Image 1: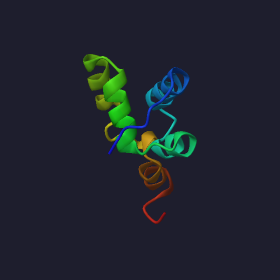
Image 2: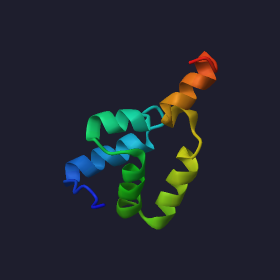
Image 3: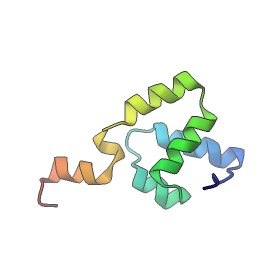
Image 4: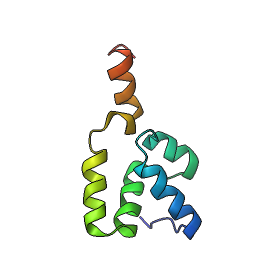
Length: 79
């Protein structure tokens, strides 16, 4: 699968959204059309290796980055 080419403005916006704790991958998909795996791929390409590792540690399992986990945690399992 070929990665979507982003212009510098789109790339900067994607990086800001991906680093922001309150912007879920679902919201990123709605705004950019990129899935979670595509966001990860773009972050890997655009960040320095150490920055990418820090970002992955930060977002892995983070409830606010995954809308379903957030709803389950804060609204109960019946959602």
